[in-house]
Length: 431
Image (cartoon, rainbow, N blue to C red; front, side, top):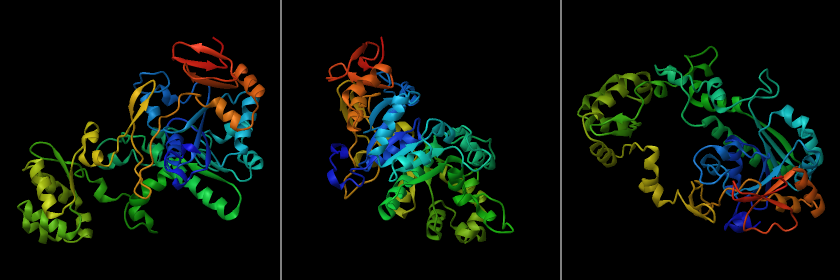
């Protein structure tokens, strides 16, 4: 499709159609990544739209900041799946889709008639990826789950207590985003499997299991062995001294790691004798004595300015960087040079700044496009699914489907009513 967005046939997923029946962050983040790879992502929304359309500042109704972050370049259709005509329309979309990604609880999907068995019977080549809170064969199956709940259950929120503080959530929806990456992998794995075997597959991506896997990669530690060779928890990450180091005028991030790094750092810090201290000779000894080591680093770094330390580390090839706050990112010289914050011209909103995808294909970053207005592509998508004009009009009239048009757009074949509050025209909604 033209939406392969200037990458043409080189886009890895060009020609792949993904039905995105997800909301909030996890699923939309996954489908946005797939859209970056060139897939045609159809965002299927309930009449009220994704909740993130209302989260954060916005000069336009339903286009709030949180929504812009994880929905760029998609197409939006509104279907009220409580209505049978809308469910029939979704099945029509499924007939020509490659992937269905959803974040509904399994029992809710089954109640609507969209169990994995029903979906694969309808389209045997479909990749069905379900991202939900808990594995379906465990006692937590079917429970609601949000990022905070999963951070608490997977051990992540407790790590700050292991550092000597209070339990706390990572100030990021990290569980949603990490599980979104697992969901992206699941889709790609399913597509590879289908290319090899010719059939679709149902893939479950449970949040708790995903985040336990993520958290324990380094923190299972001594618990790997039977009997245990020590407690779980990687000491280098759990010491309370692991933090950006205060200087005389700010903070720096410094990570001497190899034996060479540490010998050079101790010399530069004015304590060369520590290079031969048995506590700090070799990575194993340093890990066992990480509290003393990082406390010492903090004391020495505090004696000079940030600029002095950054220059010294650059000269000695010791990994180091300034501490960026959120407001600093757009001014970071590297991020500016690589074009990490492109702007998109939008007829209604003017210039909108987005965050670019990080990957490059043959040296080219996938271009970015505006996230869709709520229901912006409803009529177009239904027509592409083979639903005729009269059937579409009936769905729009009943509210089974809803089409939003900019007031300047031509809504051919659709009866429209105006919504002055949004500045948009809404089809299928009575005034």
